[in-house]
Length: 326
Image (cartoon, rainbow, N blue to C red):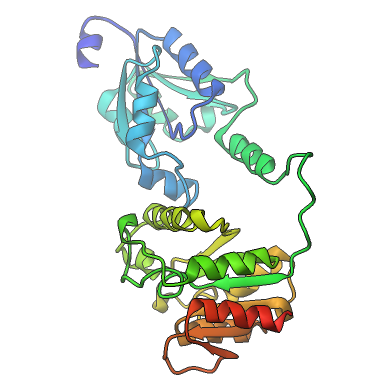
């Protein structure tokens, strides 16, 4: 970019997460390039997206997002933006144009004054497309929520089974971040299939304090869960939802088992009575959370705790649940 400026070329700068590249992005970047001779795009890092959007975003990691933006003919160079604001990059590169897309007002851009102070100009380019990453995600969510018309109506749910993950569904490896470490506990696939065939909805409720302690990330947890879903595929089992608590014991949150927050939220989401809900785990905190929410509780293993049933194996737990609802 220094060479371009030396050659008398007009340099433009813009930034964004570009998580799911859509027509609005493409048009805006094309118009931005038409306003200058060279266009530099700063793509928000994964950490910055998590800070200003959601802990569950971005959908695509920063290297993949940078690759897609760089592949556009309108873009001359791509860099990473680790900060929440582009001010440091603007002062470093001092572009002739600071360009933003959407419905911003030039005067509302917090870094705009700094650009104008060194002689640059702010340019806002509105989009002709009513598209956004959030709108795309909402559309996907809406589509997934609808069944195709030619399918038979789903039978009423017989009940809800809330399942601990580590030590209950898969072998317990402290702070598991590698999907290769996923190993189903004996009989889990068969037991879950029996419950699902009987009309029970299945969901996971899991403490994941390794995220809060810095031993892993939300993305890594999701990758482990995806491997668990793949392992359950041959049994035809579908986990409807995953509820997780990323906090540490010191945080004092309501969602961390043995508190009942995570179980109570599942009951609300599934609109299920506690009397028809079972919590299956391997630790006393699993049973305490279930009992606090009014659910019946099943524990695997030998950890001392009050529960409604002590199962010798996962299939044994499934048989007991089916017998209670028989």
